Image (tube, rainbow, N blue to C red):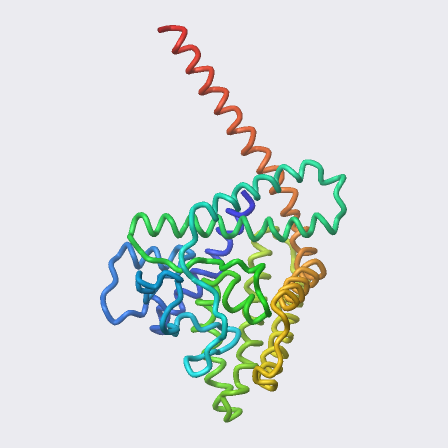
Length: 328
């Protein structure tokens, strides 16, 4: 599957490099002062998972933690305990029904692609947005389930319903691909924040260059992933996508600091503007490179091959069962 290929490229180009950096500089999940069992060490180093350091007490039925762990601080906002994020989303484990529903929706999307020649290109791009989200979340959840079953690890969810985001800060920092946020925060955001604080002499505004630096690194790593995916020379549209979001997020954070909570958009308006901005900029800068790699064509071919395999396997099992019954 195309999602599996993307995950392999992600593991090679991003996860292994950044987790190794964390280990070398004694930061991140592998920098514990106590010894780590070999199985847990290998799982954290090689799988796209994030171990929950301080699980919420079971008595808290609403899933909210009493305090905010430092590991939950976003690379894109620099929030601390002294400056918490209001309305922080629930980060509990999702139910199997949640993943089953998304798996069913993904299967329906694949079926809809059979009629893609009759679908408007813009509608197809919207479907691709949901396809990427469902595919990534399901694949990452499978890795998490494997680690949880074999090693008994309590893990953070990888996504937190990003379509409910009320700002770019909320989308990138707390809802979309949370594991990557956890990797970029200690390896990029915090070092840049430290340097910017010393240069500017003011931590309040030092978070802005730290945010931009984080998005620059993210952009370059995505360019590398897309090169692995299609062996196509980059056109730097992906870089433009992340730089645009980095700059817009800087403006958003600056405005929030300036107005200090005196004005707030209604939730539905904020969600519509946020998701609309992400999708429009994705159509403009992100998807052209994805389509240039012919990722969609290869995905459809692989889905067709997988469907044919399971169909033949089902027919083979049915034929074997009938022959066995007839023999008896």
